[in-house]
Length: 84
Image (tube, rainbow, N blue to C red; front, side):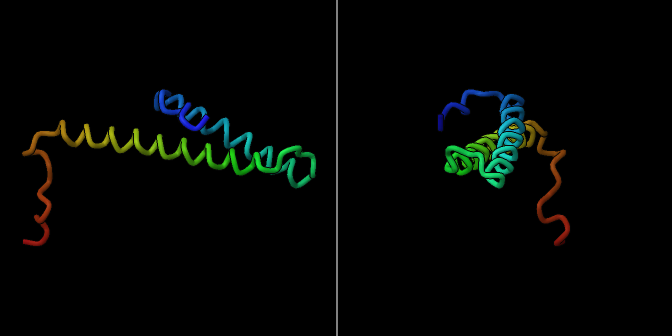
């Protein structure tokens, strides 16, 4: 299950994350009440959410890099323009 998220698109990753966050909240509530068979499920879900967040962030940074590379060099602001 660890690597099953890598082949999902950006939109699917975000939907899956929202779904897992909702399930995680329900699980936390059940743990408080005391009706949970496997309390380690909380850790597993938390780690899955973290994996999804990592993949989503990777998609966002890749998108940013491609947008920056697509800009013409003249349109980019100079890095040290304020220092001079």
